Length: 606
Image 1 (tube, rainbow, N blue to C red):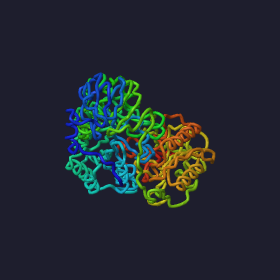
Image 2: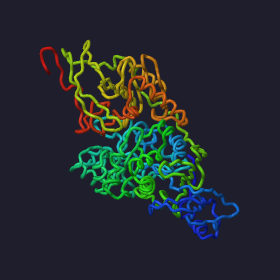
Image 3: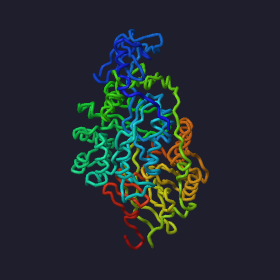
Image 4: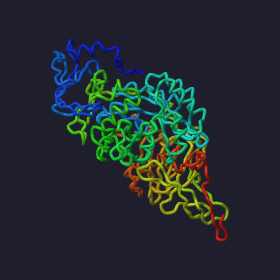
């Protein structure tokens, strides 16, 4: 691994002072811009920024005294100079890209700092996979700070992962140079009930002086929430209501408001600031999950900031939530998040604070993008061949593997059915009457089958259940090896033959997403690295995603970004109902429940 060398403040402090006082010329001066100061929440016209060795030396009305013969000059021409944007919580794997290609995709959108939790890779490849992600992150021309995954598995006893992260793994990771803290603590019942393993991971992180990420995905704000906060998580991004945001901030947590490809949780919570008047410095904007199609077609953190502004948040407040608030939360206020002396020179030039066109991006004092084009190299890690062979099914899948046998004598059943909710991560626990034909329970109307196929240890295990809300029609199946968080293979379909075709196809290509309709493949996104990521360019992956979205629509699905709903059907830490390799999970009670509530024949009700 070849890390990009970037000097610490102590190494360049004499040079910063020399430039600021005019004794030494700057490497770069940005001249004649409007200085957006996120510390004082002001926009100050007619200012210059002087930079040396990738750090800001001074921001003054006239930096002509810092200009020498070799000084590069960028004319701001009256545009706003804002800090590079920070994503406070995200998963690079959800972009379907390696860190290098994710960075290449988001640099033109003005994201210069990311706080990433690679728990997707951790579930498949364990600590070695986390280290590979961490190492590629340190090779990039922008700032990627890695959080050590905390919950692998996310819900012990309810699912089986490829690997398990231990407190010793967490303690070891806290010594790595790019680790900023502990990833989202998804096992919120474990924290609330003082599980020794969870507390040991939190303790190791706090002893290292680093930040513990939160994930409290319950609407219950009573004693369990109080216990969770007492357990140490410092932030939370799982709120969906104004009351959630208020409760977290009042308890000393940072409330992270997310806008991802499918999670629209900013509008419902930003009113805590815009209407209730809570201190905005305790709120952070983030994406959580954005797939490559969103990155290429819509944007990244610039999209989130624009959305917050459209929801009534003032532009300067929204920018605080995407810069200095994030930096302060992670203890990096002296490094990133503002355009002030000593900080890394991560700067965006934009002509409009509301629409936020990203016209010129500077990272660490170097122009990295202009007018939507990335201008720098984003080096790749040398991923070993072993990471491309992670789909192990144990046997050739047939249509019979997806048969759901009815109880003896039943001609209908009442089944527990997962109900997807558009634009939100939570699901509904539904009870639906389903017919029995030839001894097999069948979907009906909007209810189709969902199956989870074990793919880490080649056990051959398959869990079958039902899901509602996708709107699929006709013979089809969609399969993916992205199935948060354990990342087995998840298949949703209306036809068992197409489900088998899709499963075997992903086994052959080493993972990804495929859609079959009428026994013909209609879309394929290959994700060979851990079955989660591609090291191809984002534009190429996004083209496959566009084809996938079109194929889903052709099969009758009209949900916004339904792929994200598909990929979270196995996320057994977000209520209400999920599927795992061990069965159906009622996340409200964190316990397995049967597929059938009852069944019926002509003479009785069982």
